[in-house]
Amino acid sequence: MIQKKLSGIVTIIIWLLPVVYLISIYNTIPQTVPMHFGIDGKADRFGSKQELVWTVIALSAVAAGIYLLIRFLPRIDPKKTARYSAGTFKKLSFALIVFFSALQLFVIKASVSGNVAVSKLLLPIIGLFFIYLGNLMYSVKPNYFFGIRTPWTLENESTWRATHQLAGKLWLAGGLLITIVTLLLPFKIGFIVFMCIVFVIALIPVIFSYRYYKKQKKSDA
Image: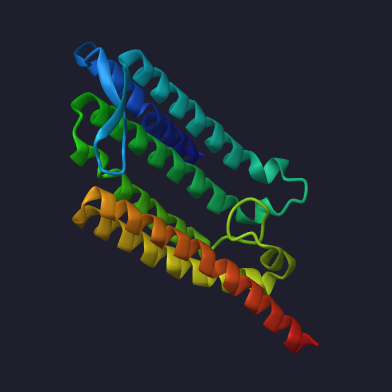
């Protein structure tokens, strides 16, 4: 019970960090700040500091909404499949809060400073998130909400397990590669590499699940 309460307190603190940070520096923020950076790393849209505040508030609201949805999935799932992965969903919801808070902090920092180097750290952060998701892939049970949810993995538990064993390895390797490569390469090239890696690690498990399912069907025939 104490551990559960402590976990909840830590989650709330992490969730509030961007808002607290924004409030602490609000008086030093210029009236006009960069709001978006192009693929070349240059600011291509500017807005008021009020827009920055509302952006952070919106991201915080989205983070809270997703967190609550994931935490309550095992209770509201009509098919009751999510309850078998309740522990995984707790880890996922916490990771999403950390990810959204990091994203907001970088948005604030990049907007206030106009420093492209700050925004360049966003892709490595996403890479670290993929590494974490890769770890979760190994333990997630069949469900309709998280994982490689193809018609073939949802139809056959053996296909689900084999696909997620592969996906876990791919997402770990892909996340590590994204983290390293996007730190070392210029932002534009790093972004292209990032998109290519995401495409590959998303597509391969889908193709694998189909082939594995067909192979299982033939062996069972």
